[in-house]
Amino acid sequence: MTPAPVIELRDVTKSYPGGVHALRGVNLTVEEGELLAVVGPSGSGKSTMLNVIGTLDRSTTGTVRVAGYDVSELSDSRLSALRARHIGFVFQHFHLAAGRDAVDNVADGLLYAGVPLKERRARAREALAKVRLDHRSSHTPNELSGGEKQRVAIARALVGAPRLLLADEPTGALDTASGAIVMELVHELHASGTTICVITHDNEIADSLPRRVRFRDGEIVSDSRSGTCPASSRTEGAGS
Image (cartoon, rainbow, N blue to C red; front, side, top):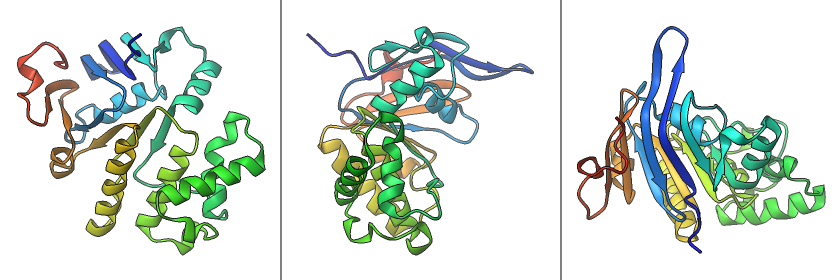
């Protein structure tokens, strides 16, 4: 049996009071194991789409399915469970707890999964090793560089073994060298089987990924894969 897509959006809109239309009829399918960039300028709708995909916000109309679940049919508590089990988040500004070391910051990613503290910390150490930070596990955020903080944040997102990693401008607060290390990790994690969606305004980052979904004014204007013609000339992916 073919597994359900990790992400499936059909005719999705998101509107706010005052006539603001952040998403306009978006259609998007992301299969298991894909690595894609959602790219566009500020205000194009890409971050709104991340919030909708991540079930942090509900669409106004249309169908949103994540890991096979129609999110419109789930209560807030079941949405929280869906996020805890299936989705990992990485944000531009890390959101690490200042007084807690790297192990406990990563272990916090399992707080809502009902995992005992000892196991949370053991799994946190494994996740830190994956991002090559096991030697910094006892350090607090003020003792880490920006790039190291982002790698801790990635480990926290991965500690629950999510099917989907959503990374919102993961290199936006980093220098070029640290950003390159983070993107190297993204490629390694994808090679290990994680489905990853990177939200970015950086065309260089987008062009380094195998699939690029370009947003403008709340619509998908192109959807292309390396070695293929843009999907904007096909039906899939085009927002209308």
